[in-house]
Amino acid sequence: AAVRVRLAGVEPAPRLVLDGGVADDRYPPEVEAALCFACFEAVQNATRHAPSTVVTVRLWRDGGDVGFTVSDCGPGFEVSGASPGTGRQSMADRLAAAGGEVDVRSSPGAGTTVTGRVPARTLLPSGTEE
Image (cartoon, rainbow, N blue to C red; front, side, top):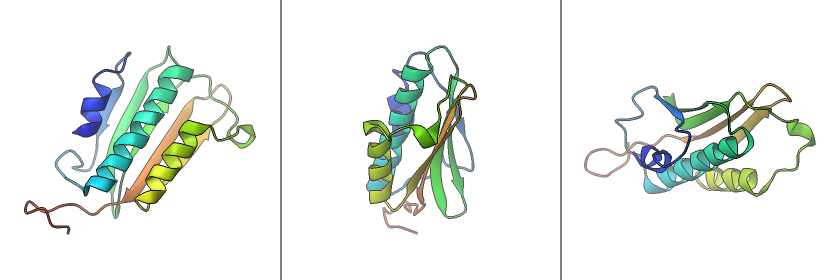
């Protein structure tokens, strides 16, 4: 829900895809905050560096992880030669604090895909963890 709210003001509006029942699950606040922050940072980077392309945001749950993938068909860049900017480092730090990680894949002319994941501990209706 928090990601949907944060994406509501982004122009042009990214395409949002929800997989694996992720829309119905609730996670501990630190997990939701880390995912929301990193996902929004990735969307901001995509709209800044690939403004004329469609940005797709996919939220997913896969086995023991919950995460997001933000992809665009923009100009891309050489990941190995690029210094991790403040945004990339902030995403990595936020996700690592929740036990997760970020992966950035790109190449010149081929767009960029950012994937963030953290271990999925869903909250039961009473507010306790699974």
